[in-house]
Image (cartoon, rainbow, N blue to C red; front, side, top):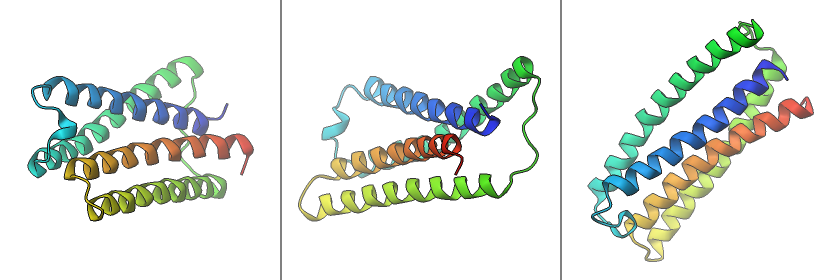
Length: 148
């Protein structure tokens, strides 16, 4: 298995782990009011603003731990270069992730237009963000396995 495949698998699991822990945080610390019934825009804006640095920090920490463990186990360093295949795979997976996120964004805006609550819009936005990251990682793994 190539280093890029391992990195994509670690990224996939880190996205899932951070998202699940964040969901547990939301449900645990905001259990006095059901977050799904909360139409307070400041509440939802705060949750999204907190999600971004938590995901960035968590992914950086997990990636550093992966590099250390990979170096100990395989004595292999992270490649200092990326060839055309790596860039092509990254662009294709980014395109897939972007399409999924934008579809979720349009769906969340359509939900507001037809009369759903603001909480529904934010749940759709957060879900499309998480789903797009997972789809991007899965597509990278697929493309590396396929060799294209």
